[in-house]
Image 1 (cartoon, rainbow, N blue to C red):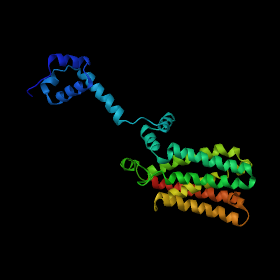
Image 2: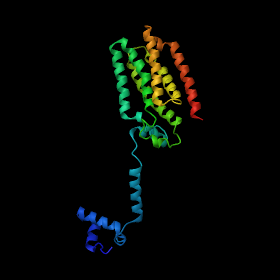
Image 3: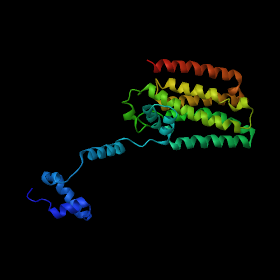
Image 4: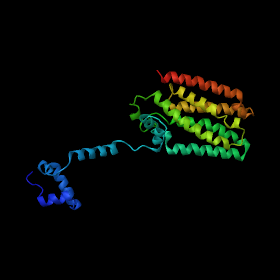
Length: 261
């Protein structure tokens, strides 16, 4: 270059007293002039530390509340990040779960004949969460998570377990508010575990949303049969609970074998 920054302008630039437009003009000149750029003093250690701080802020995202909670509970950092990126672990899904359970509890307290609303809804909520937990159509970060060692059945199982735990915990907190005996208040638990396990087992052959719809439809058919025969408690009777528990154990064993291959 035939022109270089004058000494007076150079001193004002270093002092930070230049007007914004003039400072940007000097910055532009420094980008293309090695001689003027070499005249600007700097500390190598400070410069490297500054770049590292910038990279940390730009590349490393700020941990979400869910991720910080999981880390505090002892979950490894990489697994906490994968779980916090689960679409259904977002605030909107959690609010929807709480709202659905609250509505079912309020309906049951208004009349005993509405108690089935809670018992029917509680097993369906985890299915909705699992349906939206993994897959290219529902997960904005699917391309990134698909490249991790946990991708595939293991990641789906991990995320589904987290979704199931959250939904079951919310339903368990709501159960004591039901106007029903303790045994009937928790009659949704084994059906919920069986339905979630069935959904995950079907996901080996079907897309996850379709597997969730199929499992949810089967559950509604079982409940509807009891309602049609005039005894809606039949779907929650002790004999039915034994069937749900046995099915959940068998399906979980199957899922464990698949995930460890």
